[in-house]
Length: 520
Image (cartoon, rainbow, N blue to C red; front, top):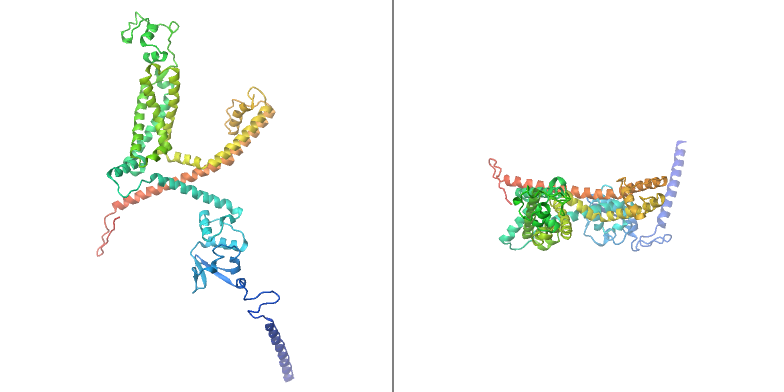
């Protein structure tokens, strides 16, 4: 029984093994030769590029290996990866891989672009670094998807603006170079650094602080001259000049004598006549600044003039001196003083005439340019001017939005609230400007229900328009200001490091060891 069962099992196993081996043999017979190809698929292994379908490439970027199919790399032609097989510069035969010493994180995003056809910038990558990698891998930056395009451009614009600021500072601090420099050129460079760069020495800091105080004092004098508390009545000679008569004619009208010296007039015999009985009356509005303010202003003008002359004499580049806006403003700020002195000497009898007074009044307005000297001493104002210069697109956008809104709401309020305050559309412009900027002087306001509705929409529109554009200006200002502050800290640390190196000149002496120090 046992032997018959064992023979039956052996027979079944032999039949199964024979059928299995015959099946394998038939399958192997149907496999084409490597150079013969497959009739159904039409593929031949000796066809050009057929190895890309089944072969993979190992690319090591910054220590991170990536295995990718060869046909994937050819999806984007005219790139470094698509032309990888044309050069063996980066191929390491001992490891069978291509090696690139580049950023591995960015390469993962670029390789994913070959696989999916969409180029995305990682959130933890700077746009400038991403741009450098794109240039290396020869990928066009216009292929970046729209969802990442904003972050990429913001980072790129930020770098461009900071490079411009750094280049501007470097260009301003740059001195002309020459093979041989005379003693005058060395003295000129030292004097120029003393005048232009307060951080160059302690004496330069003191001079810059003094100049800053002078500017503040000049602003005070400029404002105080217009206040009645700092004015006095004109002298008799000034009154004679004002009326265009001689001093004897003035005294003849006031005291009944043609005496030219007031100290020789007998006031008991010739009392002062009342203003009703005289032709040339004293006007309370005809007052002149206090002599102390005049003296201070003259001292300030002399200081500013000497400073301007020294800057011109010691300026390494004279052409750049005349094209600098600050130098031009300094010249305009001192010109009114000298022109007024010339007028007093040449046209002494006509200095209070209407023509001369109006001309001098216009010239005195130029004194406001003295405030521009604050730009030399306060970096915050320089950053503000630079922000406005680089934000001209946003400023134009804000101006266009406000102009269109002002015209629309001025037209609406004119038809919604017709009265004396809104008699014409151009007159309504003032109300629209004050309302949209949320100033609200209250001198002009609507009085009808429809006018209230128009005013409400005007206020909300102004808040939205300003809120959309102003944050961009604020961001640019903070960007420039932080950059300037960081550079200031960097310069300060560099100065401390130099002072430390100068003080630490003595070598450290250790028993049995000789230490040498190399001085630069």
